[in-house]
Length: 107
Image 1 (spheres, rainbow, N blue to C red):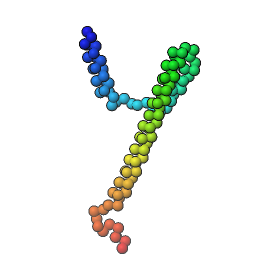
Image 2: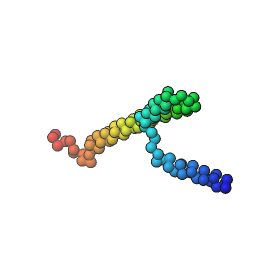
Image 3: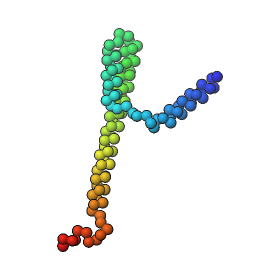
Image 4: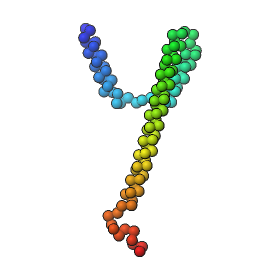
């Protein structure tokens, strides 16, 4: 019985690995909202254990928000670079002609 639970545990890790590429990372807006929610939960709690857990969760969400902001900035920079490269390639294509007399018709 114990061996089967180990196998199912490793199988679930394998399944998680397969789905890892399909998971959408959280946005910085979601992370900041969850951070605020956890901070409010910590502030409203009268129990030390709940407050400690909520503060730890808020710190984790803050860390994830920073990572999300970096991902979002990197994505914007990559999109701007791709747009600039496409614009440059379009200009080169317009300037190239197989006809050597192109542009000399007015001369």
